[in-house]
Image 1 (spheres, rainbow, N blue to C red):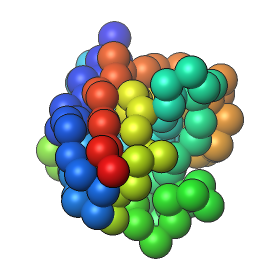
Image 2: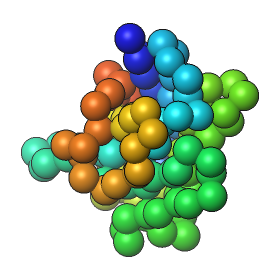
Image 3: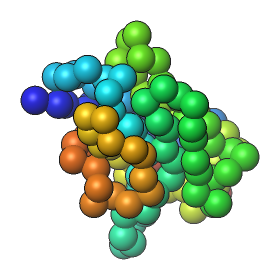
Image 4: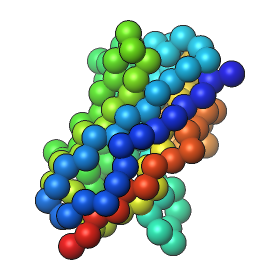
Length: 125
């Protein structure tokens, strides 16, 4: 059974950085496409970033492009999201998600079959 556990959230000021991590267990990590989604307060869940199994393909939401970087370590079964130049509008619960095995990454949340419990990121102005 795949399990995803996020960590690294917190309260920061605008302009600060945070690094989120997601620990994967229960299957072969490198077989899964991975992504980060977020749910701002009072809003629907939205796509943030995705990465392919072989790390050759990444894609970002326009709102975070150039500020956020998704990465994965297939030896350590870890997914990361480096978030720089944070803005108040980045405030949300951040979720990591896995799709697979052997499925292509997608921006559609309903295509992912495994989710973490979420980690809160709050950016004050």
